[in-house]
Image 1: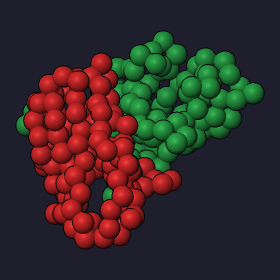
Image 2: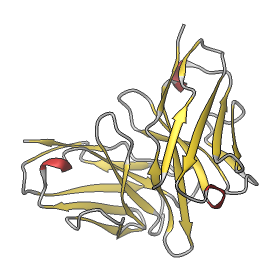
Image 3: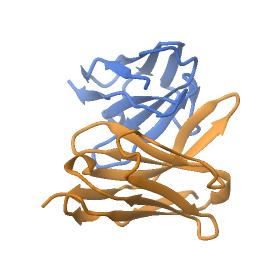
Image 4: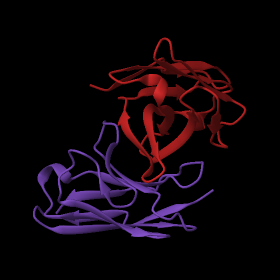
Length: 107
Length: 122
């Protein structure tokens, strides 16, 4: 199975900050990487697919990049509603594994 | 408007069985693969199983293979997950989610239900 790691596990930031989260795959997955946002008690919400394609309706302050084994989710100008947990998922090969998540908290 | 609504969760004794349902509306159900994803309390997401749009293929995570069965009824727009031999490690919120796939964009899960909680405990 393809393993995903995320760094950092926890991130403390302020409104307006630019933050980046890294997701690393145990083997090359081309651009088969998806990012989700999850808030407490809620289902995950799709943010980005194919490593860098923004889902319809997602604010443009969210962006994704990367290829192969290293990927980055960037939030440019953190907003109060962005404080949540962010999780990556590889969709190159079944089982479609998820990363452990990065919690973004208010500083 | 796309909706996925899970039901059937509850408390079950270890070794017991439970059948989850997921009712879909607002889209052509028979055109999409549907997945089950679970999340243990305070933990990350774990992909569980997928069934092809026409029911022709199923794939399972190793952790549930041989114990869980995914199925669907396209005439009723419903997805099911039969869970047998449940253990404490199966305690989680179970989500059904619509899978989208294209040759250019790959796969992703664009709509999720609200989840149903399964607790395996004596």
